[in-house]
Length: 295
Image (cartoon, rainbow, N blue to C red; front, side, top):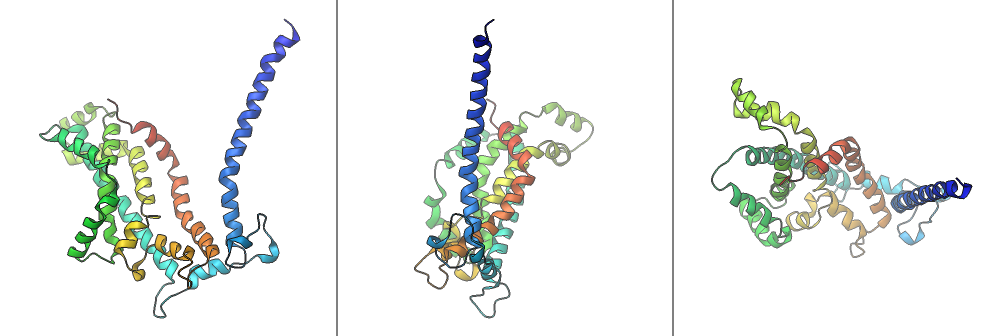
């Protein structure tokens, strides 16, 4: 066999390897460079993005933007700085939304995967149809409901909207996963004397941990950067972190306008989401792969 015949496949393999690593390097650069520039901007003096260098200048290094976030109070009698209060409101809504969505959708998916009852298919069909319409179509109706029940300017009641919007999609997701769990496990537990609730909480929930983790991560991330609903339903004294950050980028609100403060706030906001993503990444990958509907 000639050297050219042997060297051909090796050369092709080498070129493919170079292309693979080159593409991965290019994709990583696209992701990392904007994040690195955000870090540089958050540590640069001033308030205009035009003055932010591509490479950090240690002479312009400052923590004033982070100091602003954790010290500024628009009202003298406020207990917490504006950003901290908005952050904690968003965190409380996200945590409560995670618990409600994970519990309700798991129970709903369990019912649709294990029981046969009248109206089951029409309800599932309705869930599918609801996914066609964006939530913004119901904005006026949501506002009227909140005003009627006295829920305006109360951030915690946003959970009703977030949870209701998450139920249809996540129900199908969990139902598809639970259908892969053999029904014989439920029947064996029932023969041993376990009730339906015991089967659900002691057997199904532990087995469904991957898909529940995936649903929980999505439910946790949903409220953080939602701007439209909080803007319509909350006043500035009860703002969420998304509204606070928007005010930092609006040149018409001169008191708050400072894009570099926004960069610092965006990085702080990304911290809990990043931590949750890292901790729950095994559930995200497994849940996306195993939660699909199987015929």
